[in-house]
Structures are given as structure tokens and as C-alpha cells.
Length: 114
Length: 116
Image (cartoon, rainbow over all chains, first blue to last red; front, side):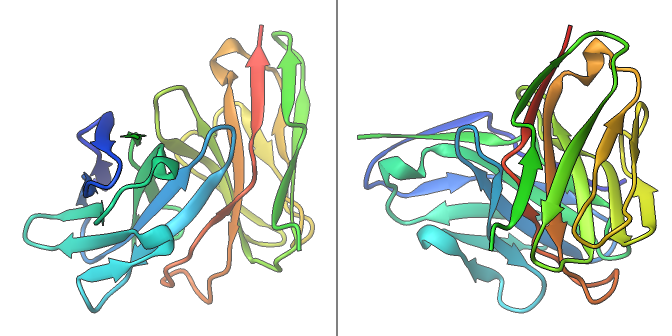
């Protein structure tokens, strides 16, 4: 069965420090992987996606994610956190066989302290 | 270009009442989706559509109905509201050439529904 896990409910980082938000997945075959961000009282916004090719994917707002097939992970990273990065982050995985099989993780709340 | 719009923003229903959540997109996307987001949880897919006239069930379709008569609109109908349907509902759209294409989804701002 297809699934995605975000093992941390909350991540706290000081401004200027690097941040990592973790995501692991389970799909049959090769996955499409996504990261979305949700600011308070807003819909989700696309950050980046992995389809194929380079394992390091760069996205919006200085975020990047590293696809690791052997560890079935797709962790979100940023070299230097900003207070404005504080939000809820969702990892999502899609089975290539069907547009309907898009599974979202439970979300990780990122809090950046000044 | 407004993207994905949803109405209403908030609604309180009594048990057994009906309502329709509206969703419109102006990006000429062929795929549209309805999700619900419960507190502290991720999104669960309710229904989706791959084009006008075509809809299919997602992960949690019970208690809901949809229709897709035009490319732009994808309303979600609750026939007999129940407290378990208290949630935030998000509509999304994407463009895909075919079912195998990775599609970035664009989300509306959400409808916060409470059933008492």
C-alpha cells in the first residue's frame, strides 16, 4: 500500500540555522514526490517536486529536497531558516499509475524563533 | 487570473442539513480534486475529476457527491450533514497530459465547515 510518513509533528529551529523536515515514503514502483507549505488559514502552496533525474531538487523560497531511493526518503531542507518560513509543511507521494492515488503526510509544523 | 476560488469561506450546518461547496478554477486545468483536512491530520482525497463529465471516488467519498459539468466548476455536495463531516475542505486543480504525468496541484483557500 502507498503511504507517506512525516515522523516529526513539530520542528523548532533558530533563525539563520539550517533546517530539515523529514519525509519517508512507501510506493510500488518509482514515486512522484512533492512538498507543499500551508500558511495559517490558507490553502496549500506547491514548493517542489521530484519526478526523475537529479536527486537534489530545488524549489521555491530557497528550499530544496533530497531524494534518497535506498532510504525511501525525501527530506526538505534549507541552509538558513527565516522566521517567515514558520508554517505547516506537507510531504506527498503519488503512484505513477493513477492521478487519484496522491497521499499526503500528516504535516510537520515548522517554527523558526528569532 | 484568480486561480482556484472556493465559496463559502465558513459555514455552520445543523445535523441533517444539505449544502454545496463551490469550487471554480480559471486555469483551464483538466484535473480537479476535493480534499478534507481534519485537525492535526493530513489531507484526505474525497473525489476527483479528470475532465468535464468524469468523476471518481477518492479515499473518503461516503456522505459526499460531486459533479463536473464544465471544466471550470467542481461543486461538492453534502446531502445529510453529520458531525463527522466537520472539517476544512480544500479544492485543488492541476493540468496533466495523461494519468502518468506528475501534476502540481493548485489549492483554493478552503471552506471551514462545522456541523452541530
